[in-house]
Length: 103
Image (cartoon, rainbow, N blue to C red; front, side):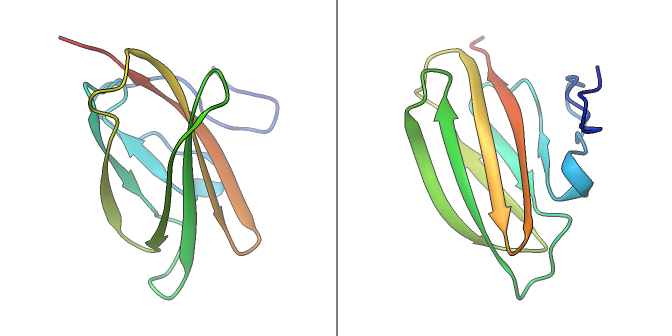
């Protein structure tokens, strides 16, 4: 499914999902808790602020990560559901949903 701004928001298990301007990719999605956030649209000298929110609007995680690499993050211990990931760096920003499932 494509949103009005060209974001790819469909879920493809175990594959990276390109988002706004390829700023970042998140996989696997859905996840059982641990997932990889790949900051593909930034070089290593840039810092990205990552925030993860519940659908109720509660901020669950805030991190500042070096750009240009992969970072393992975790929502382990959180209830199954949909969470919002927001990434901001310089003049770029992007957001995506990640789905947490339990086996």
